[in-house]
Image (cartoon, helix red, strand yellow):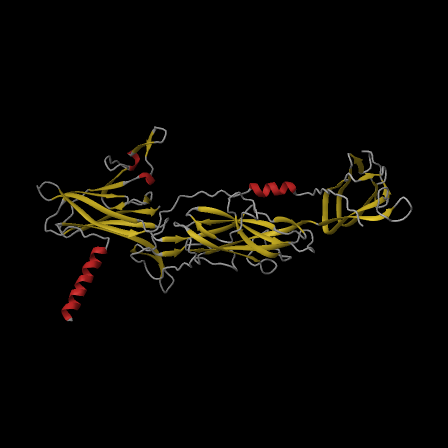
Length: 352
Length: 164
């Protein structure tokens, strides 16, 4: 019978402040709202004149008028200007984009996320040019509650059925990072938004030939990523990237030996358990400010002065060594640890 | 069958005519005609670029439209004291400095009642202060021709405006 102690292992790494910065840099666009399509613009002039000694006369011109056409224009932009920092092996890593309807009518938008091709990423603008690994399982989700935070339970729509003219929508690309990624390696991804009819999501067709008497549909979008979309194709795209910033950390707690009161290995009240916490850092880079804490359960009693780190005995007191035991909690302050690394923390406790 | 075809054609013409949004001017000694055009750059076979005006194409927010009024004297006498008024169409914004019309005194208005030269046209600001009106605030233009218009002559005036 194996006995598992309740464990709380807290992990603090660097770059937490950078996450705050990513949330702050959301571009604010301002522009005048364009006249909706189908609006009639008309013009009629009047004139007065005099012939000889007659009283003045008035004349009106014809009324010339035309309809405002539909301008289809979309802009996809990445948020923050820098890559999303990830750990190797991280699941569900989030990149934010904005999709803006710059046209004069509401449209729907189909969304598509893809890995960039080539290294440098074809058509990429720094810092999204180096493309060292492939993120996997890419998915697109619309920020449906507009809070700029990806919530998998709420943000589930893969496309935008309705976006009013002159309005912006945040979209998330979510992907997984392979376990074998090294520090500073980057995976560039693209988001493409294609304008479609609102709600029905039917494809748009640009009016060909000259002006018609009705509302013409004109694709006025710019070109995004050169290998993905072009001028006037009702689509726009942009790059962003995942950047591996911290090595992969795993922590494994186990019981490595049992000594019962009669010298055997039976797990029973009075048995002494030797626990091991194996801290493993793979990949490359440095985990900074690494602290391991373990709160022991009530069913066991810690044996004082039994902690060791990599075979070196440590004191329980809060002193110069990096280990202490207080309020039934073991705390080992490892500080900055460069990958790869294997650290073994051991301690003993008696089953009550 | 023929009568039917004739009636059908006549009906079709009548229907198309009524659907057209452009009204005809009343016939009289002086004809006043309004046109709306866009200007595009064309390159000829030799690579030479020039500007060409066409009836409005691609009327999108941000597009520039040239509104021209052509006055024609169709009688055998000259006419004088000519004043032409044209409003800036709803849904457009006057393009600063774009008004044209030879030998005219040109006045602007923001309310259709008071007309003044650009440098004298006043408006009240949001905070109640009086200031000179900005070109984008103009709502009407008035051209007062200095000379009379001789028999058979035409005179063109106009301006550019951007679709909002």
